[in-house]
Structure formats: structure tokens, C-alpha cells
Amino acid sequence: MLGAERYIRDGNTGKRSSMANESANDTAQMIGPVILLGPPGAGKGTQSRKIVDQYGIPQISTGDLLRDNVSRGTELGLEAKAIMARGELVPDELMYGIVALRLRECDCERGFVLDGFPRTPAQAGWLDAFLEKEVFDKSGNPKNLAAEKCPPVVIQLLVDYNQLLLRLTGRRSCPTCGRLYNIHLQPPRVDELCDLDGSKLVIRDDDRREVIAERLEAYETQTKPVADYYRLQRRLVAVNADRPVADVTAQIFSVIDRHKQDRNHGC
Ligand code: AP5
Image (cartoon, rainbow, N blue to C red; front, side):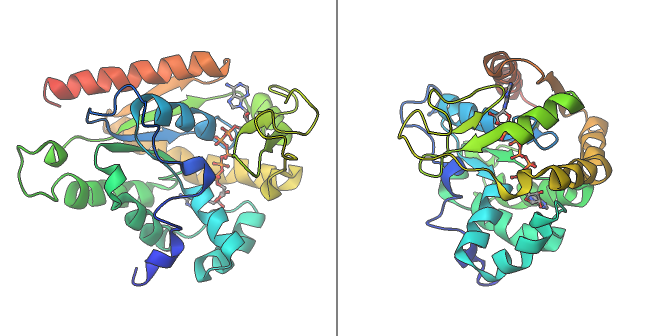
């Protein structure tokens, strides 16, 4: 993990991981860790941004962190590049340093939304140990809000396979502001141009059909067991994400709000 600082740019995680909106409704409250679990194209990135705006906590997307390292040509980026291009998972050991570094940033103290992590049961176990040791115990004072021991809320986004294919093959993003579009489902007003800043939209390297198939396969074999891990701990809440974005957002907010209330009553 030594020297891992160079893997985080300016203490942030790239465009999708923007720091919370100052005008967010819940900026004074402890939210805790929120984990969005779901296959490629389930809407983890889309919904993470809604959570950022609503609750004022940062989004931590391991996919964005890795892509940022690839584009900057760091040692991690060089190792991850070919693996990601094949649609496979980057080895767990390479992920831990970069995630630990990001979670130690002070903007995570009230909570954070994890998008794309954990992705294997080993990563889930590592995260539990990390949260227990570093995030909730770091003040050493159990009465301190930041020291409150509260497990993450884990929200599983369920989407039909054919809908996932439409979402992934149609995805476009703005290279300037990071806004997501979908040429089939949420097209921009002008073909291939961002509604907000007019930039030409781009296609992600791993959104080619053959790579999509690999990514979905990796999800089935390596990431689905993560849902079982959290189900056994009674932390998993499944949400029907095969609905319009706003409907999915409303379901997610109600799960997070319920979790907050439970915490107030001692979780
Ligand atoms: P990552 O970047 O995490 O990609 P992913 O998990 O494959 O997820 P996506 O970003 O493709 O989809 P999403 O669920 O965020 O959906 P989105 O909101 O964009 O990972 C990429 C790679 O990095 C991995 O393959 C792996 O190699 C590596 N990696 C990352 N984390 C790792 C880890 N922890 N361990 C090991 N390796 C790791 O939406 C998709 C589209 O659908 C968009 O066009 C959007 O507009 C549209 N859409 C969203 N919601 C709706 C809706 N409700 N209705 C209609 N359209 C919608």
C-alpha cells in the first residue's frame, strides 16, 4: 500500500466521484456507508450521483478510480488496463490499497456510497474489517458520532438481462462533465452531444459486445456471491431497478432513510 497516494488524483476519484453538493438536504447528518451492488449496467453510477446530491456524501467508484489510473499511466493503471479491456476483475490485492486510501479521505467521515466495490466475497470481508478498524473506531471514543459502529446498508439493484444489454450497448458519457446518456433509453437532445456543455459523447472501451459478455459472466461467477455474503448478515435490501431512474431513486432513498432511522434507535 506504500506510495499508493499517487493512485488517487487530488484526493478524489474522477468525474463520477465528485464531492457532495453543498446544498444537499442531509449534509449535517451521519449517513454511514452505502453499498450499491449490481451487475454492469444496473445503474450503480446513475443512482450514486443521486445519492451524492441528496445526502451530501461522496461517491467512490472503483471503476472510475481504475480508469483514471489507466488514463494517467500509473503503475496500477498499467496493470489494470489489459484486465479491464478483457472484462475481467482486477485482482483483489490491487484494489485494497486504492480503496483504503480513498476511504481515509476526510470527506468520507459522514458516509460514502461505494459503486463497484466490493465485487468478490474476499473484498466484502476486507471491507468489513477495514470499516470496523479504521472508519468507526478511529476516534477511539464510542460516543463520538464518527465512532458509531454501524454496518453498511447494502442495496442490490435487480435488472433483467436483456435490459442490461440495452443499457450497456447504448451508454454514452460526456467526457467534460461525466453526465450519462443512453441512445436507446435516455438520448441527448442533439444526437451524440451533451445537453449541458455540447461536448461530443464517448463510448466506454469495455462497452463492446464481446467485453460486455465477459463482464456479465464475471458478475455471475464472482460478484453474485457477494449478495449471499450480505444476505447471510441480513444487510441486503433488494430493489427493483428495472424501472425508470426516478422510481429507482425513490426506492433507494427510502431504504437509506429507514437505515438512518434504525441507527438512531441503535443498530
Ligand atoms: P465499473 O466501472 O464498476 O463498471 P460496471 O460494474 O461494469 O458497471 P457500469 O459502470 O457498467 O454500470 P452501472 O451499474 O454503473 O450503470 P450506469 O449507471 O452507468 O467497472 C469496470 C471494470 O473495472 C470492471 O469490469 C473491472 O475490470 C474493474 N473493476 C471495478 N471495480 C472493481 C473491483 N472492486 N474489483 C475488481 N475489478 C474492478 O448505467 C448504465 C446505462 O444505463 C447508462 O446509459 C444509463 O444512462 C442507463 N440507465 C441507468 N439506469 C437506468 C434506468 N433506471 N432506466 C433506463 N436506463 C438507465
